[in-house]
Length: 568
Image (cartoon, one colour):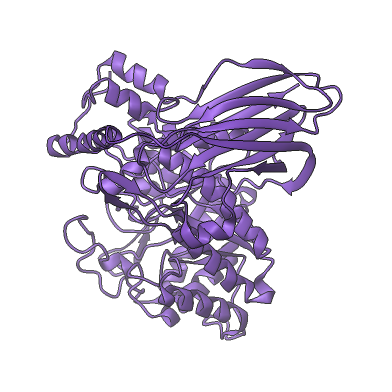
């Protein structure tokens, strides 16, 4: 039996969010059901479907090897036919390894009584051993500044949400050479422990969001840090892949200028280590965030804002012809900017517990890929900055895949992703908003009902979603679903439809219906685990295909996601 230690006040507040939604649902009627026709052409190939979704991340590095963290890593690895990448902050931050919200530490670098460096890899090994055991591919963020190297070490550890967040760990090094020595020794240790081939496949990203207070230095000091870091990584492991700058979204002009300046430095600037022109750059990374608000008892999201960030960032990269072929990683890509904030204190984050998060992410994936195609960007990954938060109250509402081992709707969406094929085929929906509409107005005036279709051997998999920015109750879309272009031998096809919505694959709904227990009994906990598993919306059915065409109909609830799998 699991023992829950809920924080009383926070747990009481957590009940307020579902009650507000229920009260809102009782006000007024629902609009008429939208009729949508989705046509998939199984014979019309549209190129590869890259697994850019298989990237996750989190602030708290020490959560990685917690019981809940290791279990989540195993589940993420199990659901995907391709390696899932994990990125975490605080890999070089000083401290004893005790986790806290928005904090982590490994104590990799200290000084002895004589002022000589002491390198300690024990906690880092626990993190990377957890990756290896689960089958996760590390996306290695090189940061933050050890206390003994910081130019302003005091105060060092923050105590978020009380007091300043950006303390001594966010400052430049006293010695760039000492910093480079630390990075060099760390990479060499990783090579000895995990092998050249494995480590050479990792991405090494220099710092996080240096355009804001994560870096208390100038852009030029960051470029110097980058040059010393990249040189150290490459000396330790020739062929290692290094990139950056992991800047924030360019809705801030300062962020756009920072990204442009960094790319210009890598192309034509003077290298701080070699004195030659340019800096090694194997991939480009930056972040994109939406924004959420809570008004009239509803969560209102803004998909368009996040996509505008991505659009502007892709424009910037496209402006450097010599960099156009480099992979791009959105090393944080999320509906808003505070993963550790809970829904009790921040009701605008209540979407995280519901299928609204899943439908947003499905819509985001499709439109991010569309933007990459528009600018001929080689998108490698888009990191969903979500993990799990051990020790927090059940369903507290941090940005997470699971709560105390219970899957949330977001994790079931990723299970759907893992069942998609690697080749896209044509899918057209009469309920789809076009990309420019969403960039201009998000999904406000009407929902976006759209689909991604893929194919494999004797198999078609189609992801369907019904998203809009508001969590207000609304009617389902009536989907008329048709698959064309089936091969002649597909006369009888088996159709399975998996569903994530308020009433399917939704542990949060089950928890509310059982009275929101703060300490579930073993039987209640088992029910929650079962409710969080990806399930079928209805029984599998056999359909007849005539002249390569088969059809079915189903409802797609607002903020719902379906995965239709057709086999023959």
